Length: 231
Ligand code: IYR
Image (cartoon, rainbow, N blue to C red; front, side, top):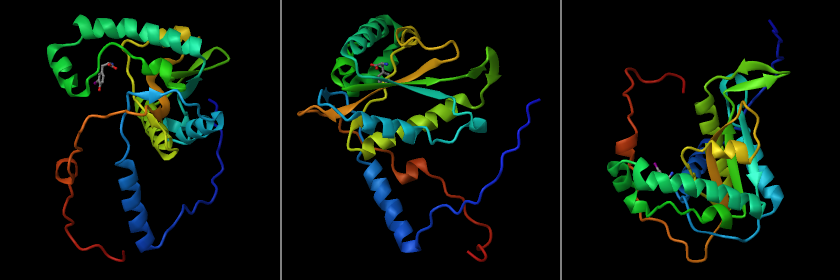
């Protein structure tokens, strides 16, 4: 067994006075509430350093046993984007013409999606998130833990970082997406998880007029038996 001891270092977190805490929590909620998934991008360039910061922000996510079981593949090459679009549309054509159930197609109607995915070429960057069910160290397999949860959280951080930079994104799920493994020449221990086009919205971009669930619909508070002491 390879049991290495990790040293513990002091950590105080970042503290705010109560009023500031309240303001920050409200403002952050209001800020995140402005995020929308966007399907119409413009091709305006974005500095690579911004993308790098966004990806590294995602990689700060917690993960099972701190294995960080993810790889973020960043694609801006037009030829590669075209290849990805063509392969994705081939799968999506099949999905929209027989592979998806009537109920699913009906559920998607409000979003106006179809098999065509022009955003895969128009957005200046595609970030393809890969998950790693196991690590390969000198040809040996080392299992990772809670991989979907970990990579899901990292993707949440990624979307938040994109929004924070004043950019927009889409969580795109061509299905099946194993074609990405081959096109991007990934190692055997990686599986495509999500495709995330990143950019500015198109000049006349629109999004569906959706409502988010209310507090009553998403939160359950449990009454305290006794008043809390010393808080
Ligand atoms: N992957 C398809 C279908 C699709 C599925 C869901 I669930 C969505 O929320 C949106 C689309 C596509 O990308 O069109």
